[in-house]
Structure formats: structure tokens, C-alpha cells
Length: 189
Image (cartoon, rainbow, N blue to C red; front, side, top):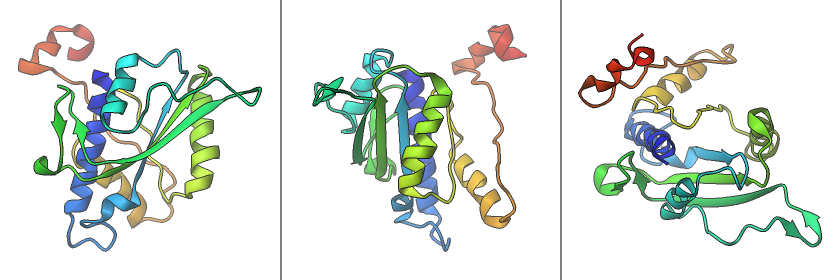
């Protein structure tokens, strides 16, 4: 759940940044209403229970509701929706409005079976993309922590040039506390 909370808290910090852009024609204090965070878990048996606990703590997930068969038909996925007012940081501490966290609209899709990443992308684009009709989609893997203004800069690339069809951000390895991660040759390189 540490990688998950690192990513989600980073996204929520980005939403806070977008909402702080008071002179923007697009963003501002209600900018969070223009963003839906879509989380897709690849298999009910594969997702770590502590990740589900983190989602439950945010109000997004409820244990015991998902069933694998309904009306004698196999279930493919379970969808939960909630607008959370709090975030969990990587230290599993709650952060809310007192720390500047804005509300966050969350769609959580818990796939019944593990069918790998491309199937998850298919769910995202064909199911949620078709329903939400977003102007821009940003995909993040669990464990990736976006810098506090990273999503703004990705959005800005699309906003400034209608010919831009895709953009990628820079990825930096986390060095850890006291840069102890640099003792790992993979991180140090």
C-alpha cells in the first residue's frame, strides 16, 4: 500500500496545485470537479489487502460487497465511486483540507480476474473513457510519485498546442531518506 498511497497522494497534491491556480481560465478553486481519478486493480485475489484497506479508509471501497457471480452470471469487474475529502500520504497519515488537500473524485474498478496491463488499459479507455469523454488522460503506474506540479505541466502541453497527441514526463529515481537509496547500484546509476 506504500506505493499506492505514494502515487495517489502525489496525484492529490497535483489536484491541489491545479486548484491553487486562481488566475487560470480552466482551473481555480473548483478545478477538482474537472478531474476523475480512475484506479484499476488487476484481479480481486491479486490486489494487496492493505491497498484495499487504504481505499476503504478514503471511503472509496467497501469490503464484502463484491461477488463473483450475480444472477448466475460471472462478474468481470466491480466499480466503486466516491468523492474523498482526505488523502493518505506514504507514511499512512491522513491529510485533509487543513493541509490544503482538495476533494478528489475517484472511480475504483476492481477486476474479478487478473488479466494483465493491456486488459486494464482496455477497461480504462473503452469503459471509463467512453463514459466520461475526457479531453486528456494521464496514466500512472502504482509507485510512481508525480512531482506536485507534474500533471499541470503535462496538461499545459496539450492546452498550448492542439496538435499534441501525447506527452511523457521525466522519471527520477527516489533517493530515499538521507539519500540512502544511492547505496543501491540500480538507483545510483
